[in-house]
Image (cartoon, rainbow, N blue to C red):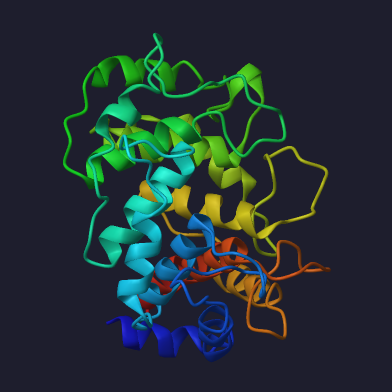
Length: 294
């Protein structure tokens, strides 16, 4: 199935270029970096493994990669950040391994009195106020650890729901926050199909010429690759497809650079593993919908 999907994706993007872009940026320690000549990072290694898996490509030097990732966990089981914990845990599981120590104690130490994880007092330019909560719950689920106070966590997330149906702190609507909220609620077993206003808001963000804008009333038509990802994946949680799939996959192809990677904007920018991940997984999701409808 994945091989067939790779062939379908090749009609829209340079898949071989993506694979080459990723593989050429693996360091001798087994880790990866989007910028050749720099140290390996947990983030880029995670994105590399995810992308290669999606494209049905076996990573090289797996044991080295596993050892690199395991070396990023502190001796007490903690990590330098919840993001590093997530990148390491997810990548190791994809490689058939797991962290040296169960990070459960570290993850639970991040939970606040209101039920969420980390702080919601983040900068307005931050990706999402709910990201730390999502990452924490995902780690617990990946390692089959029990999730306590589910109802309290759900209540906290729903408290960030705005009157227009979107999610975001201080009334600021964000696609990223909305996706993180929906993904977390789904992990916790909450029936997201009751959130009719949220679905309506997401659909309102879809642009007729492809992609997703920041909010339905946005006068800014500047579309970024991560907005496409969060829009597409939010619809997927509702089992909904894009209204303009051909326009969106065509738009995604314009984000690809000559080196095979993808950039944040169609106009300019360097390739990153993160933006390449957003492009590949958005395209994969849309093409699955298109394939089903044929």
